[in-house]
Image (cartoon, rainbow, N blue to C red; front, side, top):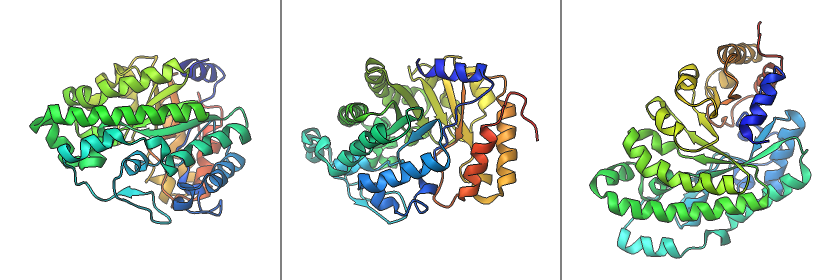
Length: 338
């Protein structure tokens, strides 16, 4: 079955697919660090196994990492022990850098190979009923990591032709990485395109969606689901996103999901959108269960919906609150009450 068929099948059983983006809260309990897990497949698998054994979500993604492709393309990167790796230098000169970027085989990068090895181990070691997900950067976001997000936004107006040249190179590298993830066992590819939230609908179509379509096509050729993930308030992009060809939209807590369901096709899955820095981080387990229940009640008449968080959960989210999310989500939910 494809993604939408799986979602509808669960709905007919009075259930929802649970796919919280919860890697980071499991890092310390698993006895490792973010830095180690993002660079070492054995350490990464400690986190994946911990999540599986404690919460057993329907969908499990590896740790979210927006820096991996940019780092593989030579961008300066810092690796704090308990924070996600980040790109810290955005010096970009088209004449100097673009030929070099084109020539780099990012598949030889050690961190990319670590993620591929993690997926091979997930396929071998995790239960077969857990759907395995991988992240790749979106083309617009990767271009922004190379030259700086503000510079990227300016270049879409000041030098669109030159910026397209960079987006094309970024897309080629992302396609290489996507193929690697699929070959390693990923069953879903989530394209992380947070920087695209700053674009208007026309710019979004031109500088993100038109490039992401090639990733969509690759995923569909390989029988793999594709998720478009964008942070922030993306309500102005919903009509465009509906035309993207993606199987699902993973959207932040700023988005009204009932409104989103009215705009997008019923064949487009909505994933989200519990606030990752709200009650689940600062409240009690009872608060979390109530908020999850409210979200499920709001979405009870919308079959094309997967319960998740609006973005990845921070390291500080208590384990008990993740458990409360899973307990609430696993109840029979079409008439959910507290």
